Image 1 (cartoon, chains in turn blue, green):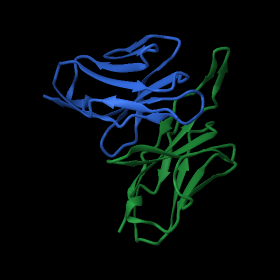
Image 2: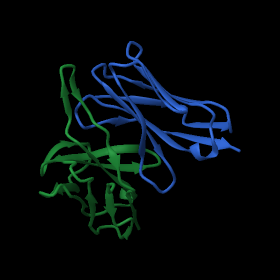
Image 3: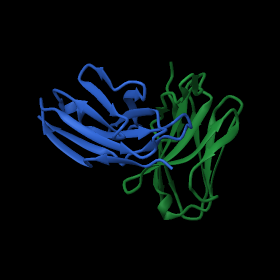
Length: 111
Length: 120
């Protein structure tokens, strides 16, 4: 089955800095890669996703890149703000309704 | 548009008891998935229902079961509770898979707030 590795497990940055979270996947047939943000006491919320037919997608301060050859994808957050502090999860799936999630990255943005 | 609603938000049960959790998906979503979230194991897939049928199942013991009703609402049941069942149980709903010439594409999963189950 699919295996998704996510790094780092904890990321601490100063407000205004950039943050990068990386994930690798094992199943070359995976074609959908969502990123979720989970704030304390809440369920995960989709913040951006990318499909295998594109290499990069951007939404304001958030961007995701995908390298299908290397089987890795990354989340980039620029100009971080304290409200970006949360746990971020990556996932990979291939039209099977069973996305495999990474273990999560706890992002801490210091004011 | 209302989001995914899970009830109750919090539950405290005793070992050996059973529990039923409820999930109301977003209107129009026919796929409902359940996940167990713990600090040590992350998000673990339990099962997925589509049109009242269990379509996919994760690696959990038979004590974990679920069902989906004709209105797409879903319930999951855990019998003979163990201390290790303490976790946040999340429900997610999705639209139908998109079929394209490039293959099958998953659609976005919308999560509920979860039910925090504590077994004592």
